[in-house]
Image (tube, rainbow, N blue to C red):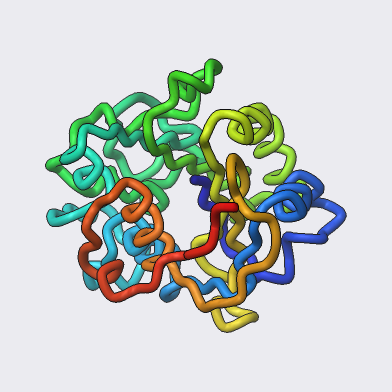
Amino acid sequence: MVVLENKASTEIVGNPDAPFLTDLAAHGLQLTNSYAITHPSEPNYLALFSGSTHGVTGDDCPVPLSGPNLAAALHTVGARFVGYSESLPRPGFTGCADGPYARKHNPWANFGSLPASVNQPMTAFPADESRLPDLAFVIPNLDDDMHDGSIGQADRWLNAHLGSYAAWAVNHNSALIVTTDEDDSSAGNHITTLFAGAHIRPGRYAPHVDHYGVLRTLLDAFGLPAFAGAAGAAAVTGVYG
């Protein structure tokens, strides 16, 4: 799963500066009624990872948290989660920033009960896709996630770093999800969310989905009980053909 930044639903798919993402949408499933939870960034990342904004209303750091979360839930069934953050200076780093890396976009760094091993730099992303964990989040840095850089820059970064995985996933029972944390305050928080990969049914999915619903979908995929905001959210159904 990849989380990008601050773009409304109409700004990405079909944009000539975003050929990789447009192609993913053409061959995968585009959620046309996908919404973020709030503004600004950090509470949306927390919602997607833990089903709650935890009362966070800004981009505060540090934010020490406890409670249920996706990584801990996966651990209960022997599944492995890793978050890969571009420009994270070293595994397990809990500082607030380092160059274009920002902890506000790295929700697992806030949960002290999680092992440092879940918090990895993008340089640790395996070249051999078969060595990936059961579920991974990829967080580009501020230059490559559409926050400070352009849509084209982000699209090229994704193609360079995940293009091989996207092609591999189709024949290896795997899938790539791409979403954005929030819009640019121009579209009522209407965002782009795409599913692409093995068994994904191509097309456009109209029911309303938010970050809690995406979390619910991930939990359902692993047979895990939903928690917090995900428990009351509808999962994306009819994804698989």
